[in-house]
Picture 1 (cartoon, helix red, strand yellow):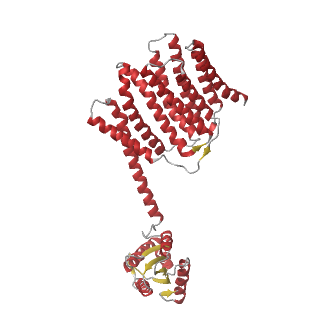
Picture 2 (cartoon, one colour):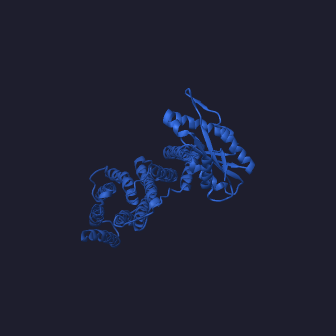
Picture 3 (cartoon, helix red, strand yellow):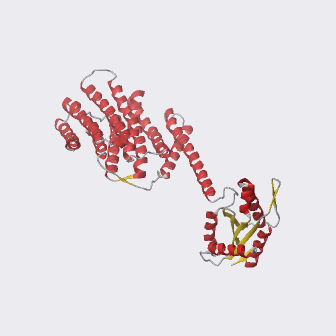
Length: 456
């Protein structure tokens, strides 16, 4: 506990000390920029390891590796500022800085998501937003930057990649804590990522304008961001139990901007660099793929809802569907009919369930043909059916008698002659909530008295 407290307090103190020394001497020196600055990064990595959670090791390992790679890049950059040991030192340090992002993109969202595994669609949505913003940023940042690098493609590549990667990091991380997380962890993590990203943008702006000074406030911004991210691991989070998706407006804006940018490239060739097409087209392709998945899911949900209210054997609506329709039927004139087959159990016993299933299907067909188009026929289970029918008492009774008559002649199935009867309970709709119960009682009354239809 004391060690963790020491690590949490030492980094902010050293950052403050690094800033004061920089302001006092007003110039970069070896002690401050090589040793003190990079010790802070080492303490951040150590602090994350000490706070590691065995159930969230992927986040711990990936975040630590990310910070470690960035620290190596920082150390090489610091040493090369004071000592010339390689002509490729800038490229090497920038490469380590760039390697920070793949591991950060894996680790930070898992810290943000409080061990919640991000779904494929969440990652896709975040990627669409990130790529769309990256394409826009690339289009308007690269053009003014290119002249300042005198055609040095490698310097331009690194200087643009960092802020673009920051945008992607913000988007992917946002997919986690915007959907499920609140509390102190979110505050520290979001602040850390934002300060780190703003430092990259400020560095690029100063570099373009020739005002960047090694050891300035920008350098402190990066390590402040790291310390805040490290601090977030020490705090618990308030998890929202009802998951929320990324706002579709953000996706729409991202796709719209990408499509607009693509149109500008087509209308004015050469104005933007040609490689701007890569993130732009990637955004639109991902959006198209995402839309196809959404349409497939919507279709599946629709089919599942239909299946949930449909009897698998006969294809008729089931009990759930009939009960739902009864609630809408309360204020209409009409009747509820409950039908129970007579003599069906011996058919299953003597001919088998396969023949019994065929009989039920043919019964459903006969009932359907006898009903008006606005009536609802449902199989309630077993050999029981229900009918909701609108109209006057005389009309609904005529329909009930017609249904009874449909089973007055036998079924011929696989050479067997099968006779069935039906008992029907008829209840006029009076708006009460017990229609189904009363229809059930009327149906059993018809069965006991041996009459076809009993009106309750």
